[in-house]
Image 1 (cartoon, rainbow, N blue to C red):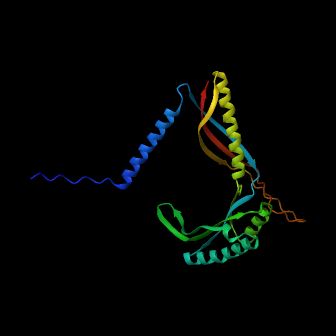
Image 2 (cartoon, one colour):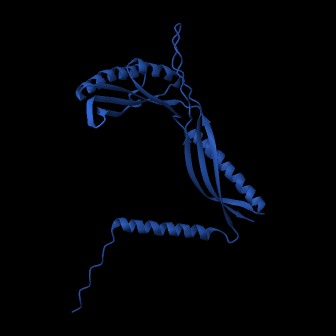
Length: 247
């Protein structure tokens, strides 16, 4: 009788898929290398370009902080005041999809004394929402309405472009033009010409502006809305382009 052979081990599907992916990548790299003519030279060029837009959306964080001797009282007081803030937000025309609760918290407040353990003196409750203002012209009035309705914490605004793809495409085209011009310069200096683009690797970045909200001074004869300057948003595109050079 022949000795019983051990059953072959099964390769786990995940490991098999990973091995297949590695082999495919290696084959692709080898194919790209073999596709390069013997007289060809690869040139890698990095280029960056920017597009500028005036922001059309502002994000503001607003909330209410209340304190009371016990946690339940702090939460009840907070809920009553926050209801007024939420009513003011909706009255300002902010859509429900642009209002998001970002934090609800209750925590004890302590008094510290030397050579004594901390003593709880009461509780603090907070409720914070994030809201998007899509009409920046009304942002000052929205901020004023938040404070007038009882919000005692307001942070922001941060500005963004609602639909940035057109600006990104503008930056991409400019970056590609820079990369081509740079490749042509290198080719000319080397006595070669640009044959083709082998690959393009894109990485895009967003750089928000740093506007400073300016609170208008109240005067007896006239009430001023909070003045806000949205500034300008810079959207950038970064390309790494590989060219084939030859004679």
